[in-house]
Image (cartoon, rainbow, N blue to C red):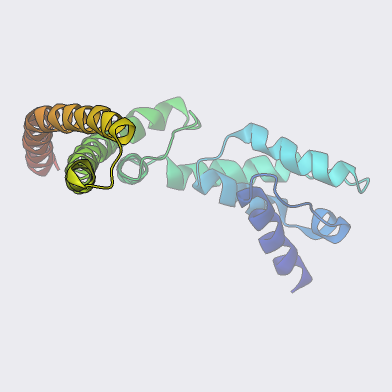
Length: 208
């Protein structure tokens, strides 16, 4: 039970990417082969073992690198699959170049397909967000213009205030015009991305 608990703690520590320290018992009793398998199955680079080494050095403990490497190699067999590459690419995760030469081509084949879909979907979401932001800003400007127009014609408004209001309404009107002029281009961009995404999905269906 202690051994299992320490393994889980060690794996969690690395997942936190250096945000937590390891205790002496974790360094002494962790199953380094199992920790290596965890890292390999998640596609982590081997130099991450240095994180364990550095933490455990504070307790005078040297992690078992041979056992870690053995476990990591087994974990990489699980990770370096075409289907896993597609999963990683689709999620937008980076690839650390960990796969052996004999399995990397298949992994990258899936990864590039997944990454293509991820990037197109991200681009489409970005275009949608820009369009929504433009439309929201235009609505806000129109409210501000209405308020300033009312202020311009108010009998209590001074001549100096009217001068400032004229400048402000001119600037707002120009901004609104610019935003309205950009929306058609954003809609075309969105349409192109949507078509490209549909084409990419169809191509994947025919190849998989």
